[in-house]
Length: 88
Image 1 (cartoon, one colour):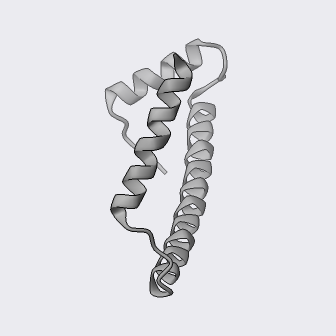
Image 2: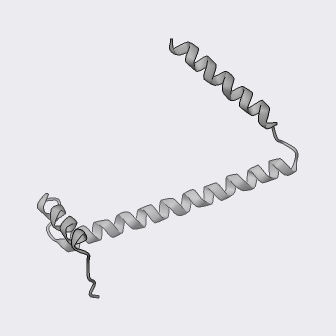
């Protein structure tokens, strides 16, 4: 496979090699691809967890297990007030 890199990417790769952490461009690119794969996996896990949380929340709404927005805001304001008082 042949690819053409933008000059700024080539400069980045050369800078990474210059640090001594990598012996050549292939090592830099391999590390970058490994990190991308890890990030993708983490994102997919986060996305699935978020979908599950949404499903739980929707089920709670359907069962009527909800709080009025004004009640929630009042509780948050009270927590903030108490936190400020305890700080000084």
